[in-house]
Length: 72
Ligand SMILES: [Zn+2]
Image (spheres, rainbow, N blue to C red):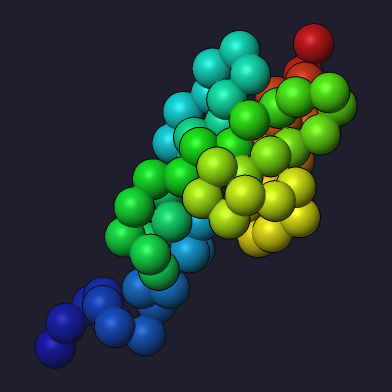
């Protein structure tokens, strides 16, 4: 009788943009259950958690960054 099927359509994305500072993009990682800071330095994204510029977080940070920069 429920009009909403809670379980079938409850696919939240793993990563969610949490906050954006001048050089830091803060991302919520649901899988890890924590917040990940990605630093934008020297035209690269650096993930403080994975200690690399190429991971799922930096990839997501790029999409957030581009989303914010293209609206000017
Ligand atoms: Zn990472």
